[in-house]
Length: 276
Ligand SMILES: C[S@@+](CC[C@H](N)C(=O)[O-])C[C@H]1O[C@@H](n2cnc3c(N)ncnc32)[C@H](O)[C@@H]1O
Image 1 (cartoon, helix red, strand yellow):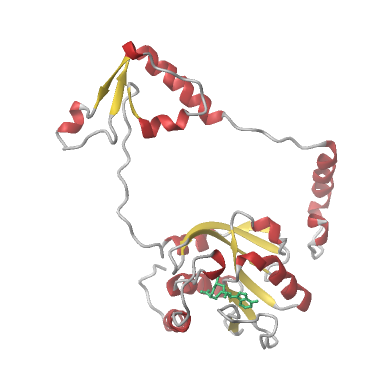
Image 2 (image 1 turned 135 degrees about the horizontal axis):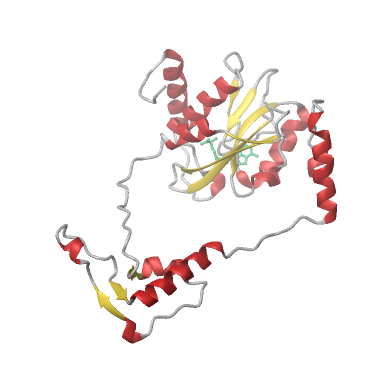
């Protein structure tokens, strides 16, 4: 279904998200990630995905996180599901509170430190959401609604969030001949020792093929000899593979071995073994 198709349920979700945004608009905008208000269309997309995925149609969705709010004192009813964007700085405390009380939740979470939340299920979505205060935060999710899964992706949710991104003019992507580079492209090999002697290159501001389109090389460029272009190619390959590989210790290999053996077990998981 595309985002332009309106069903009564979809209109209801979108209207509720809009009214909630109007409620939040009364509060002064701050800039920290804890104060990132969720655009209503983003919340509606998350709500829709979660409601379908976890069959939440008959459950009350609550949002206890707002300025001056107190999620501990909130009046949770049996069957409630907390679907909200909490302050990330205390997200582990929040999920611990809900897990201890058996309150179900589906919460926005910071992508970069997702696993440190130690939630029953962590959804690696990693969509950069632009919040109402302009902050752009790589966002994933945690939930109690799927305890049999520890880590998963959710491509349809990622796609739904992507569809809500404000449309910006895409920057054109140019590929230059091997003998031509500008400084922005050369930055990619700054970790590799590489130099071009003065007698093997010249400055140019545009290629003849660009002139017909009124284009230039952004920031100016250099054209170099074939020998230097070949060295550059090698440097680009080297820069691409330069990374540190961490290896498993014998102790960690034993953990993997244990997990391999327990693969066939279907008993209900708990968070203790993974995060002990
Ligand atoms: C990331 S913002 C999200 C606000 C809103 N729920 C949304 O989705 O747009 C988190 C909000 O939680 C509020 N907050 C901070 N500590 C809280 C607490 N202990 N209980 C409830 N809300 C809290 C912050 O003031 C902030 O407004």
